[in-house]
Every structure is written in C-alpha cells, then in structure tokens.
Length: 239
Ligand code: SF4
Image 1: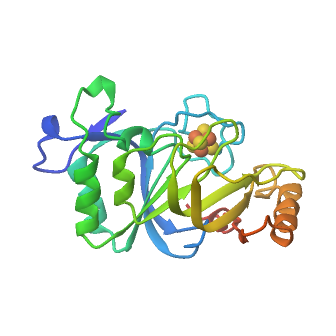
Image 2: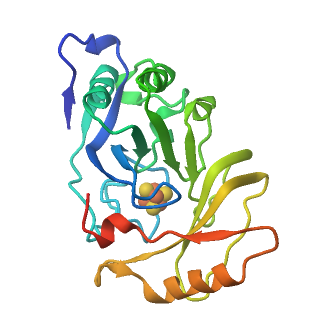
C-alpha cells in the first residue's frame, strides 16, 4: 500500500481513498453499455460473494479470469480530481469493491483518522462536466448518493438493499438455470437488467444462467421490462 498525492496537495488535510485502479474503458454492462468512461475502482467490500470476480474486493476474494492486481494505493482527493480532469471521458464510474464503504460520510478509513470529504470530491467532478455513475450493492446508503447522475444497484442475495426510492438501474445477477428475480422493496428503476454470472474457465457467460435470463426476458413479472446485460468488456477482453 502506498500513499500518493498530487503535486501541491495538502495530504494531511485531505481525504484519501483506498483505490485499486483507475483506467479508461467502455462501459460493458447496463443501459450505458458502449460509452467511454473513466473507472475508479475502490478497494474493499462489506460482502464476500462466492462468485466475486474482483480480486481486490476482499483479501481472500476468489481470483477470476478478469481479476486484476490486488495492489491498492491511498489516493488523495486532489489526485482523483486531477485524474478526472486529465481524462477526455465524459463519464466517471465509481465501482469496486463497494465504493459506498468509503464514500459514506460516516465511514472514514479508521487508520487515517481523517475527515471524509466525499461530497467535495463528487461536486468537484461534477463541476468538470462529467456524468457521475455509481455501482453499488445497495447495503450502504448515504446522502452523497444523491450527487450521482446514474446509480446502479446490484442486489446480493441475503443482503437487503437499504435504499428506498428510484434509481436508474437495478442490475440482478442470475447465477443458475433456476434462479429467479425478486423486486427490491421500496425501490424502483428506469432499467431492470439481468446479468448472467461469468464462467471464468470458459471466459463467457455461464450458459444455464444466460438461458435463464432469456427465459425471464420472455416471461417478466407484471409491470417490469427486463433487458440483458452480458459484460461486453469481458467478451471483448477489455479492462
Ligand atoms: S458485492 Fe460485488 S464486490 Fe462485493 S463481494 Fe459481492 S460481488 Fe464482490
């Protein structure tokens, strides 16, 4: 673990976030698939799903074919803002791990004993004219979520979503050929997407889950329209 700050930054007074990687790619999932974006991947997650393919969600997380380096660094608020400023991508995706674990105003990184300036971080990025996306499991909520333009909730079984209201996307992971879809109480969305789990050995969507998604598309619950989301970035071997 390393601490990086931008030149001239007052590191001791700034929020710092544990970040795994910052990279540009196309969005591979959900209704904005194909758009160029700058991805900021936050270290750590409050859950530990069996199918997790994010090597750095947890220290002991399983490493899938798409997993990247588990190394992470502390990045200062000004460093992150400068990275966004340098990027030509008009969208910035906060992903993880679980970004809200660090962005929620009450959740500082304890070992740093620092002020959490997430609101300043998000407002600064928005002032650069970027569209802010958040990908979250929905188990941690905070008022800073209102600053995101696109919130995607990806519920995880056995871990109730705490958010109530309306988001842009609810992305449901389909794990098996018998899996089903359940509404999230009190939460609606513009888009309801179904995402088959990834077969890491074959590097393709797990076929029984994909077939189940297609069946659900043909047989949706009343009032719900699904769309399929198949992790285009993995199919194309993009970051
Ligand atoms: S919520 Fe997402 S990042 Fe966290 S352990 Fe589950 S799959 Fe991994």
